[in-house]
Image 1: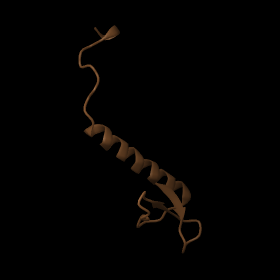
Image 2: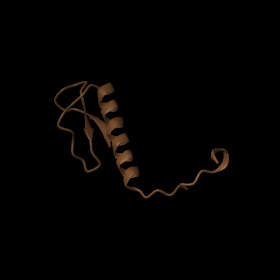
Image 3: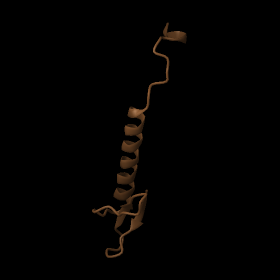
Length: 64
């Protein structure tokens, strides 16, 4: 995913998805970057929430 300049409106940007589709909305450069980071963080958290827990459930070290 990346930000790309809008062809019709100068100084405005859209978010391009990995498959090449552009976002329906456009933003100034700062807002486009913020939007991109938010989407990427949500994607990471949804992937991590579906992964099985691999850590020990018993207290270890200083937490015994």
